[in-house]
Image 1 (cartoon, one colour):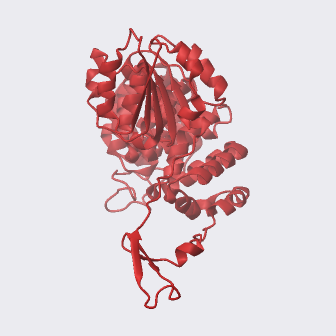
Image 2: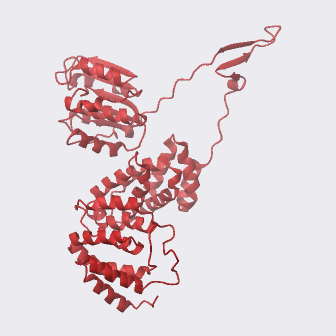
Image 3: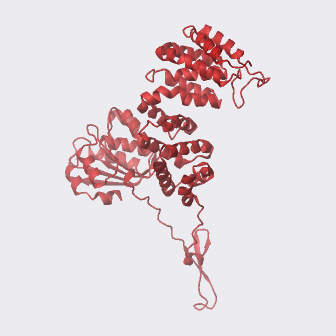
Length: 472
């Protein structure tokens, strides 16, 4: 490899950029330039990058950086040609050409509908860590900066509970946004990643370490609070195990804050009475005192079963889903917010499918939700609960619209054991009571149906009901 003369390198890169509008000529001259700077001392017989499935020219990174600098202005001014050139570079299949393709994707406006399909396909095709990192960071540069809401929608898709294989992509893509000091909406990011940290899959230990360290650098207090909250409330035993394994990579102040919560806790000894009992299968064997009978005998009685522990109501996990023509400022929504400060009362718009897409990121993978759904919101709450029963602590439905013909397909759901209370008025002229009751009795195996003397909006009943008791 010849020594890099910066003036000559700049001239070569500038000449290469002249072929931007002629992809075939560009690729031809790019090959010549990469070959010119090949580091032959690193060339292997296979000429494949370690840990990769891509061939490589072993070209110094300074060469690619100079090429990118020359391409940046012309690519941003001509995104159509940039996309065409990116496709050709990617198909070339070399490490260096794939990195340049990823760079060109980052110059394309986020509104370009062909951007995300390419990004999705390319991340699935390559296992090279450098290219993958470029696709999830450099290629998303403009989307991250210009349309952060659109970027976060993509992140939620990556971190969807049913797509564990893409969680690594979601974390990798988030890191540049977290590190961006101009980004001011960190609480939204914390809400998105909370269920991922709580799930704590061992296969993502390295990614979780990077994520937590980046969050701590962005906001030490908010990150510390989040981790303490997770560790204090999680029911997932792997959360503590995984965080204990990676805590040594955290900044020392954060290690000190989490030390007590991550310390292994000894199991509590059983009560004295229980220690005196000998347990055989499902029965308790209690010896009878010799002072009572001459010959000791054993009396066997059925073992008492403990009642299942009921999850505690958390106001932050209490959500109200409004009706079709309503919003978060409706009478019931405002009254709920006054009775339970801190509960979630979001707005939903659009079709049923669009509203469900808006709901799922709000609930995420968090558990212990108490969901209140009114009318159309009752249909939303029902569908979500039937699809994600382990996330719902209790379901309260107010005159739920379970009979809307256009959504009949959504009612073909598996029954669930989530405790459910339905409150329905005898004078409801929008959603008929008896047909809804028949549907509900098939869907919910732990159902309480409260019939009140009221109309569809339940205005009178709302004031009279004991909501603390209902939600307890």
